[in-house]
Image 1 (cartoon, helix red, strand yellow):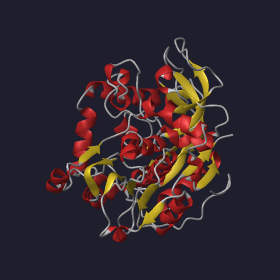
Image 2 (cartoon, rainbow, N blue to C red):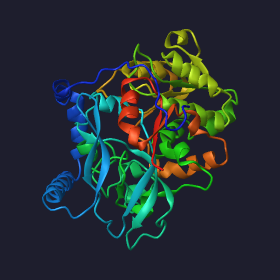
Image 3 (tube, rainbow, N blue to C red):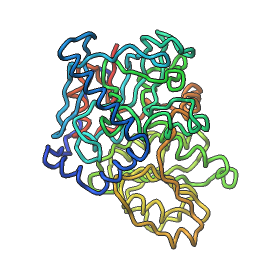
Image 4 (cartoon, one colour):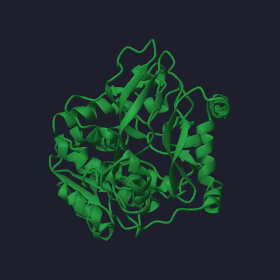
Amino acid sequence: MTKAGCVSSSPLRFRPRGWIGHTAAMLTPVSSVAGAAALERDASRRTHRLVDAARDRFAQRRRPTRARMRALMVGPGGRLAFHDVPTPPPPGPTGALVRPLAMATCDLDRPLALGRTPFPLPLALGHECVAEVMTVGAQVATVRPGDRVVVPFQISCGACGACRAGLTGNCTGVPPISMYGFGVGGGHWGGAFAEQLAIPFADAMLVPLPDGIDPVAAASVADTVCDGYRHVAPHLPALLKRDPAAEILIIAGTGRRPVFSASTPLYAGQVARALGARQVTLVDSRQAVRAHAERLGLHTLAPGELRGRPPAPLTVDLSGSRRGLWTALTHTAPDGTCSCAGILHRSVRIPTGLMFARNATLHLGRAHTRTLIPAVLELITDGHLRPQDVTTNVAPFDQSPTALREHILGDDTKTVITIP
């Protein structure tokens, strides 16, 4: 990991799409599917929120009533720059305002900023952070000003049936796919690479950071650490009880130039080892990622080296690609499970005949992050999980446009931005 205040010298490998290319991407079938999912419930509520945000912005330009702050915005062409924007309004009775202390990149931030996702640009970037509570609403009981907290990237009310069942990623108290750092596509909740962030449901969402945990180490608990955890933790106890030497096979980058960063596969490998798995194999076409995984105690293979290997009882597809999912499914053992984080395609080929013959299970979907955070923090507190060992670059907030541009155009795995 580079020292705080330093910027990685990762070579630049990716070219962002400009306005024309990004606009064309918005017209693809996958964009229509994403839009339909976001609008399948509470469409008018989502629209009203966007309209209210636009009105507030216009009013603050004409007659400012709130202080200003810096928020990092990304636009087509990979343009990253601070924008001077109004601070969020005072919180409602259940809300809070927080000051991010450590903000981390997600594996999706690179394709997002390159214009290769269904999420329209420009937008306020960032959805992983540990923050300090600034102010709270009158009804907030579990946190107070000065507390350090993990801010889950998904918005959840804590009171609806889905939240009470632990399905916080599908909270019905807000429109579908409501989350920080995805602009209009996520419901216009703001981005974590900013000097302040508004939390609508403080008691439901904010999780106190245990004493002794560095905010830099825990920043990605807001999303990707929990994402790595949920692919292996639910399956390992029964699997290791049947076979203590069972292999966990994690599929990361499979192409010549994988666009997704590799932090979630590395976190998944860390979690598997922390929970007792003896044999954890990570597959990635990038030599640097394989070297990083080996430093974490994982066995590694290039994609071509999978040929002829026996299937594994638990496979994890974190490649974000059609080829990666096919690879994971065809290497899932009889009565095994393949857990997939999803891909940015409308549809893919699935070897249903092989899966039927093997009685294999595929689980594809999003994490319910708020529900997972306490268990992940417990692993970190006990010293069994060290997310900081995945971080490749740490930089101060003032340098975040440069540091994040190098992350997006280069090969860094995890960049963390800090505010003193």
